[in-house]
Image (cartoon, rainbow over the protein chains, first blue to last red):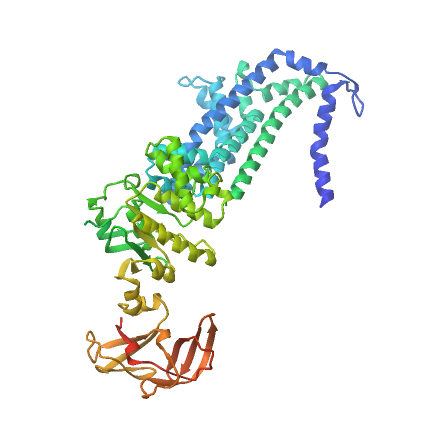
Length: 261
Length: 345
């Protein structure tokens, strides 16, 4: 058991370690490890115009995706949870989860077809990127919220609040939103991580000036190894920040709920 | 004076299942505690939801303090509810939970927290005011829920099996406490429970329900001593029930033999009836006058601390009895005054 775990960890970590090493190696050519040490690759990445623009684009798209996802997922999860009719509930849940099963490439082609038409000539705009990322990430956020609503028995909490005199708005802002804050936050961090790392769909629908970071990163692989490594480490860092903070919130949320139940 | 809660010929059927309540009428007087008991699915929770406004009756009227409440939303009814699972808001402290109904009524923060803390003191939780529900025990959560339901002086209090999630040892203390608080507030209360002992011990009146219908509404003593039928007799407390035929006004022929009874005006000879005897009315030893005496062997003997409950096997059936004595039981007799006739279904 321990052996398998360690082997798997090595398998996972070695490429990342090599990336880290490569990003600070001066030259890396026909040797096991690079020769010399330098921070120059990072400086080059930071001063490269297209990388800087892509970095900003990725952050903007990520923030937009989080915002739009939250605005859609909260009411959607709420109505899914409160839907009385079982059949309708199941159908809606399947539709909402469909994007998980559909490969991003397929979704991307769809976007290309729709948004390159004369009626909707938005291909290449930031909005189309955000729209695509929302479609891909929404199911995960939705799942997290619906599961939490069920776990908290939100319907009962709302009945209790209603009996005390709380109307819909009071219930939503005093009870529903604060009760869901942990799952909303951890779900959004998942959304952020997905958005930051998304390549397939973005590659198809992004315009030349709205290419997010992973799409531009592909270009780096045609240049110097050190540059490619440094550029990848930047993305890795971003994703890692998202993943770790996601994990931490999920854990603190579980901790709180664990005491509560 | 108007009843605090008045249900008049209320019917409700769950869509698709047909379960619910049918033609139910019930008045809860101000300050009265009514316990509703019955087997699962009898409609007692439906009754609570109808009064709370979570369900709308298909037919009939609901009045709160004399005013028609049929069109009111739950939030307009001014009714305090304690849920089986307490339904405390997990993101608020105990004091914030109790203060929330006051916040909805526009009280300033200091004023509402002061009242919430006073209410928490009444339920003995002053030192827990700043803890979240997750840090409280089941009994403490129960008290917070009770404080929260009472703090805004509602028109009525609904208790949905509030004690069923508590340990047996805690239950008895809590039920006395509920009774005490209810008395203090003088608030009309509907207490849903499946525990007949709980109902007998705290209710002013008991409603026994089955299949969406009310079988009997009466004081605990009347329910226990004069149940309307065998179902009520069997559900409230223990009972020996022997179907039989009245051969004379003072004689009933049952499977365990001819029983001598006191004449009961509602029953005429020839009518199929059931003879009911509570276990504690069964006397040990042979009767001095030889009336209703039986002898046999004890087939089950349960030690219950202060008393023991035994099943005496006799030709034709079993007699369940109770005694405080530790003596072996071989013969019993049933005083005619202890036999009550019930209509056979």
